[in-house]
Length: 323
Image (cartoon, rainbow, N blue to C red):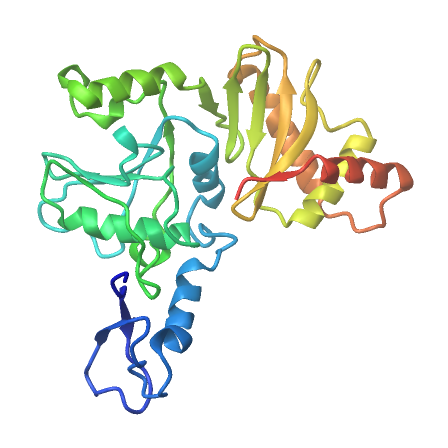
């Protein structure tokens, strides 16, 4: 017979002992709330739902929500310094968000005490923000020189929105490779060195535009692309893109084309094909001009024309959802 799975819950109800913060019970044992039902059929169901329920916009409320989405889904190598709401603990000189860490570690405490938090990891629950907050808390107290393993967070555990300073800027730095894993990349050896080499070989050249928020140019062998994470409500954004496309104003210049969009963590990401060889700096001005035109178009409220409806239908049919 399989062992009973112990589950930590917060006691509730009139029969829970006052001051008893946590009780550990098996799924088939009586619920501590005193209902007389088994835990899995009572508060266990609530706890399981809280852990597995998908949070559609896990980064909502964080500064730079669109960049959080981009770093999670689009950008191979980037870092962002994070500021904690309560300040840094003793012995922790810095906390840095990273797109990925060696061997896909969720977190890492450097030998010097600094903390690295990996963003592109499998979610253990339905709330990436809660997963990351749990990893961050454990990394802050881990022994220096050790990675932090993944685990399922407590259903009532804190989220990033609870731990980070929401007034601090969020300013990603995109890198050409993953040398940021190490304080001295020349010292890499063994599995870390092999992981670094593989990651650098697979990284797609990526640049964050400076004139608009959360727009990322990338280079592939066949063509280049611009992928732009936008904060606008989906229905309104689709209407605006349809109006611009029908008016022949949805491109970013000669040889460029708005090819569709995808959803990621509750936000829309329009995608443009760009000519091969077109560098990121040459798309800066067209992107800024498009951003202004889009903002103006978003204020329009009249019904779509037949041509605009056809354009909108085309965008909708080509949409995919990444998360």
